[in-house]
Amino acid sequence: MNQSNSSSENSSPIRLDVVVVGGGFGGMCATYKFREMGLKIQSIEAGGDLGGVWYWNRYPGARVDLPSIDYSFSFSPEVEQEWTWSEQFAAQPELLRYIDFVANRLELRKHYQFNTRVTSASWDEERKLWVVKTDRGAVFEATYCIMATGPLSVPRDPDIPGLERFKGRIIRAGRWPHEPVSFTGLRVGVIGTGSTGIQIVQDVGPQAGELFVFQRTPSFTMPMRNENLTPEYVAEVKRNYAGIRNSARNSAVGGTRPQSTRAFFSVTPNQRQVLLEDAWKQGGLSMLGTFSDLLQNAEANEHVAEFVRGKIGEMVKDPRTAEALKPRGYPIFARRPCLDSSYYETYNLPHVHLIDCINDKIIEFTEKGIRTESGETELDLLILATGYDGLTGALKAFDVTGRDGRTINDKWSDGARSHLGIMLEGFPNLFMTTGPTGPAALANIIRISEHDVDWIATAMQYMDAHHLTAMEPTPEAEQEWMDLVYELSQRTLLSKAKTWYVGANVAGKPQGLTLFTGGFAKYAELCALATKDGYRSFQFSHRAEAGALGTEAKMAAVDAIAL
Ligand code: NAP
Image 1: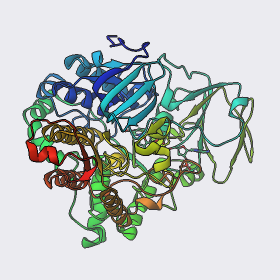
Image 2: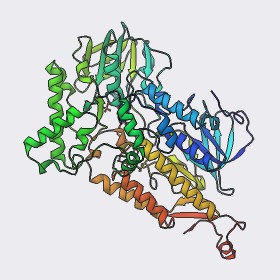
Image 3: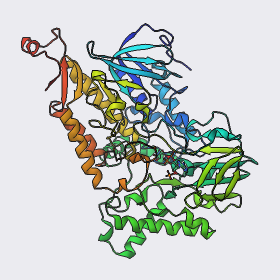
Image 4: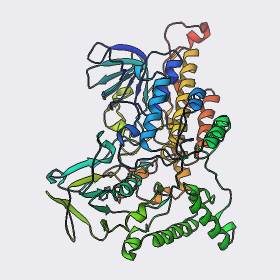
């Protein structure tokens, strides 16, 4: 692998324009964009290669739940034309091949240090730059620091005592080994039935000697109905990429999934049933697009939830298992809706067992397996699909210190805050891609990443043109954005489930929906507005020495004034 390691073991600071932290889609996009702008960059990635979640999540069955056509970069027409997707929903190996293709085509790896963790990033107010240190002893000093650390990069173990006692093999879904794992003849346990656990269960179930699924909260999962893409379809897509991207950017989800304007109760019960059946047959996330108000109207939502529960009852032969698999007590779509190919059918296999941990609580791990209230289940292999410290975990995991010695941990002690999901008051020249209070988990992460990187690039160009050295949101602007995010969140049912969206999966984490729920297109519109109004919601520092600006501008060269 071609890596730039020139400074990795060297502790004398390397002066740069930009440090990019992260080698997932956001980091790749940022690295490309800023390199093309002629900036001196260094990108850093903890993994051994590019790919972000797709580098780490090599578990069997890992597959994207958005159409591959949408889940791909739009900034390079060459890449769009030269790369051909084979399936409607690409599996993890194909996603990694795509990432490799893009990295080679755009020569991205030479800007990266891999197997390197950032240990701290501190703002030097006097010199107006970020000092970024790594665990390999490197020190970078950069005008801008881009945190492309992703919303799902810090896996978490379950809060169940005794994990260290278990003598069998433990594999974490988010840190899956690179070499093949055999399940043949093994007693395998899976904890977690979110998107990850569901993909693992349907894939590992048929292979394992016995599979025990420890389910606390059942998820709603709908048929993916994945298919191979025909050459004709691919050719048509390649002819129309510009239009496809355009409609994605103008949609709520940043993709081409149809969105209905029809409210649930605006049609007759018979028509509703027909529409839901159609969506079920069509597969993917069609169900969510069937009616316009499924995330607002609790009664409509419950009708759709009951429709899906009915389908579960039809697919799972054992009535007790079927009943335990039916989610209740929270709205459908308030947890991330999952897509599967054979999840429910997997429970019809005689060697696959569902352990309903609501009625049979997990007590502890033992040397041999897992003890629940009803007894011990012996296991050879335990798979943890227990989720992530989402949205804020990555930036809270190391020391990020902004102006006046304030850390991100301090700033987010009562919950995540930001302006536009991109910048933080008190942290000049620090930018996030897909950050908290942006749309992150609720829209196509690649569209958001590209959008955020473009927005950051425009801000950098503005600063350069106006001889500005530092930029951060005003406290008022950040508060206004937080108020808007909160107001919008109150209109949806998304807070009504205990999920990583609201921080409910991490003990002690401040609770609340810190996602922009107004849709991707609206988000992009508001970000553009913040640029077009002359960056009034930001405060800037001016360069002390004269630049290309005239005397008047020199006279106005004072630090931290709100423009
Ligand atoms: P998740 O949705 O947070 O699910 C974690 C699971 O672990 C939940 O079922 C949770 O149960 C369970 N769990 C945690 N602690 C437990 C305990 N002590 N005892 C029993 N069960 C416990 O995490 P995820 O499945 O990794 O998915 C995270 C996100 O990644 C998804 O929402 C999605 O955005 C993304 N993802 C996408 C894809 C895709 O594109 N196809 C695939 C995988 C993941 P409780 O709910 O009861 O806490």
